[in-house]
Image 1 (cartoon, rainbow, N blue to C red):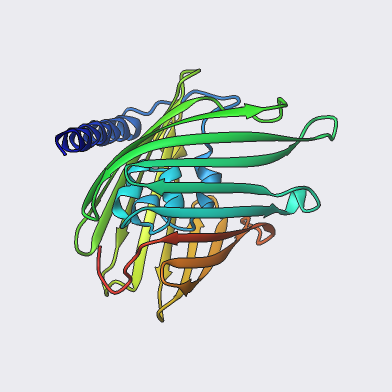
Image 2: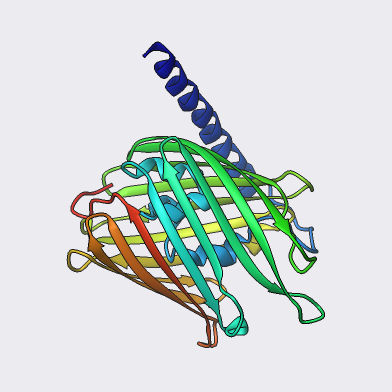
Length: 290
């Protein structure tokens, strides 16, 4: 019993430090940003990959939010799992990208596969793994995760990275902060988001923003959207990015905590660029505020 309490206290201390570090790195990222860096990046591409949520990580009820902000997992009751796959229009006849996540307090683990085509037209793939540690509750939660990858080609770079995150939720408001750090090259990004429920728990307005190392504040990518639960078991959401791309999401509650859904993604010209599907189980009470 004593050992269990010590272990729990250690986990809580680690994630609290991670939460403080996330706040610091986000503040520094947004206010000390400078113009510069160009070239290939080895970090998670938040701008593109957060489309998996059609949401903001700090306001999300999805297990997948933990990929972008490890602290988001602590807001879920008991963790959960997520299985997803994507059909990119440009690679429609190729194998699908897929993702699997398992979260059981205080640990999480995920694996995702990106299908690629090299310069010679050969099919390749990159596998990425992430292990995380998180703690907290629906009001305040923090987390830290470490990611590494294996790739049999040079078509995509993905470096080892450390991600820190924190989420705070009040009755009608949520705020999320996260930062990711490249462990192989001088690179990082800072991310912040907000969720508001001004008319009750069934409607959430959200927004997020991200800035990368070497960018100026004018280069910040932001997204804005709304999520609605008009009836029990049905979720509708839409998100627009400031570059004109947009996504839509529909989810159905199958039984208990189990949900299935799809997301469609479009560019600024209205062209369909991809579809993703997901099956997940995570505790979420839509009849209550944050």
